[in-house]
Length: 48
Image (tube, rainbow, N blue to C red; front, side, top):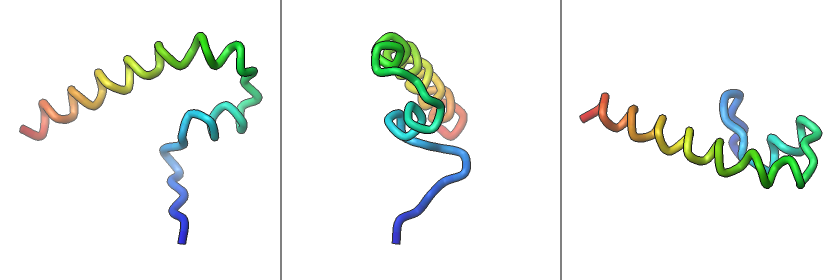
C-alpha cells in the first residue's frame, strides 16, 4: 500500500502537479532545499 500525504509531496510530484517547467525547477530546487533543511533543523531544535 502506498501512502499519500495531504501535506507533503516530493519535488518531482510537485513540479508535475503545478506545471513547473524543468528549467524553472532547476532554479527553484536549491532555494527550496535550503529552506527544507532550515525547517528540519528548527524542528530538531524544538524537539531536543
